[in-house]
Length: 385
Image 1: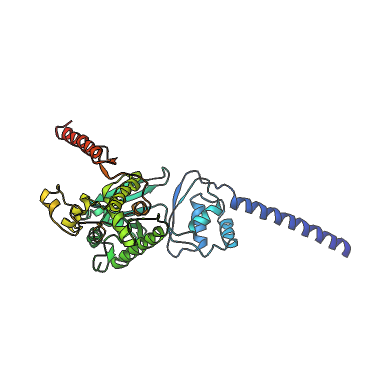
Image 2 (image 1 turned 60 degrees about the vertical axis):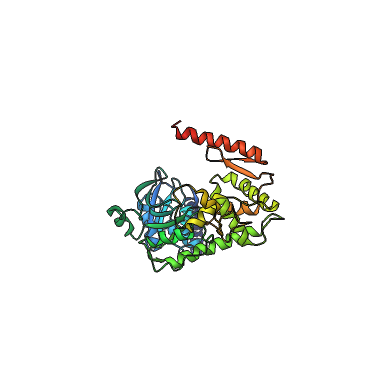
């Protein structure tokens, strides 16, 4: 009898092991296989949320088939304690494994509502956008210029929501004074900005911050990123440049930045100024003259007068030799790279071509013909043509 009992026990044990193995394999397929979600959703992970709460929330939204399998899989991968608060875009068909990677990944929100304070050369604005998860595009909700108008009530309500993301974005070519003045108007920041940072040493970039962040700390982060970029790009520079230090290269980069907004032109524009320096020619660039007049405190808003072109200032490159003493704006990485790796050309001149770009010339005669064409285009525009 005992032999029969032992045999039956072993049989049952084998069956249970087979069933367990089957359940385990099935659970694994459920975890890594395509998920049930039919259309994209924006899923919020609250601050301090537990894994089981997130799992149940995903199951309620129809993003996972089993909260239990989701939790066990996250535990097995060692990501159960890595949840990051935020709002995350979950795409149709995302597996449980992929969703775990999303909610326990970088912590950078990928959907929801965001405030973006865009600091530009001519003006700045605050834009509130919300991601339409289904269409996978942002929809603008509010837009205003804090320098010109009070914040609308819609913005105030959104800004007070703890889940709203906040970014500050610097355009290429802004001056350090413009950045500081704009940050003074950012109600979501705290603390004094302090002295205006050295010109050229704030990185045009997008900075994700938290409400209540310190202005001085944000400026320090902008400076840290710019200096890191300069050091990295300086190490990759071309040989035989007519400037010996990263500081001089940054001055050149700022001139390139202000001379053209066409990315592919930047190395060519840089080549013109490099060729002039090599030949001992004056740079004769209007943006440096304008900086000498405005000190980087806003735009000139008018044409340069002939008397201003003749007046000797540290920034009037029609009068002084070589580079001005400091950068004239904060250049982006592309302009820094162009200054350190200019195109190989014989160009010494360039002028606007009427399309937003420039036409380049090797000789003064050729340049004068190009200038005449540009003046004809300007005259035609002035006549309403």
